Length: 562
Image 1 (cartoon, rainbow, N blue to C red):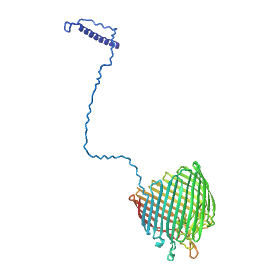
Image 2: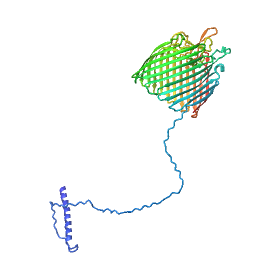
Image 3: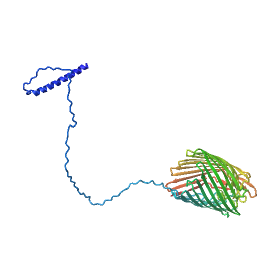
Image 4: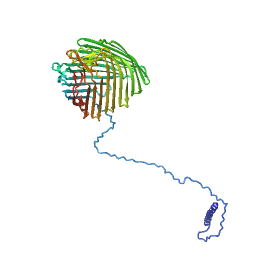
């Protein structure tokens, strides 16, 4: 059906086309449109098989052709007009944009402090130092703290401590050299008498003059396998009773790194003491401590010996001593946990320069001897927790010869002699230290030191308390207010008092609980006001028999920083 429709449509189209062609030809042959032209009858025959072929058309791609314009000579005329600005002065300032350099934060390391308090106390301190230098480090310190009145008989228990010091270091290529100078003057009174004898007793004054000098050099910044620090010190002391002491000491600390896991260390000490009192005494000390250390993964081993000599003759002192030393440490958490144990011994230098700082009421003509720590077995740990908490713990069993004790003098109970245990003094020691630091704002800490003394001949470990402890804390409030507090605990100890009839009695000192507070308020970068309150509990406790201390002591003042 569809094919028939297609054939019929094609036939109609062809018929119409043929008729149009015949009419066009008839019009060309006829004389005119109106000249008797007539339609004649015709028969249209449609042939199905006829093929109509059209001629191929010629393709002409260039439909239009445009002639290009002809080039002709052209003359271009330029006209220049001279325009002049009115005459005037114009100040053209060129501003160069630069990157602003970061300014250093101004340092206020130097300061002067001045204050006054009860007991007619004068408080002066000063610290002066250079700032930001990679060439040299130098400075000076001054201090004067004096109370014109004391806890007993006003001015007869006064105290004054003054000193001035200079220090400096020079940094060379791989070498540091430096030194220190210090002079101090300390004034005390022998007020430690019983109230019944106070009116008849002429309280005596004691004044110490101290001079210290030190020179040192080290190559810690050289980066060489052999590192060392050497120094020489000179200390001089005299008092109001024609006593004098001089000490020349040389010290060497050195280490040679054999490789990355082993090293050899050599420490040496040499000291010459000349003591002049009612007699002249010369005391010599020499120590040499070679040690080999090696690292085995997380474990480190140190083996060595401590060879020491002393010229002391007090209490039949052993002159030549050899102490084997062994120390084993393991670091299970690198940089955060250290556990160690070991054994060893040492000969410790003792001088009047040191003893009179601990107890300024020493009697004349005391006998001084070096401490011989014959054998010590110890163990402990050192740990950091989250960079905020630091913990230290240590336990040790020690044997001492010539460990000194303070006891009231038989000739004058207001003065103290040095007494020694006739034999070996055994000591069991526990030490603990815990501190918490948070972003320099809050700091808390606890220290505890316990010693269990077992004496051979002395009735008691005179004036050596069994336990000392302290709790401390600081709080920085937005850099404007700084609080400091410390609570001391010192256990009681004993002293022996000799009566005029020759008999003696044991006296127990007080158990000391001392609370101290300090507050600083910075109202500008340069000025700060401060208040210090010492012994807030107000107890006039005795650390040494017959020597009560001041009660509540308040000091207020101002600090200038620059």
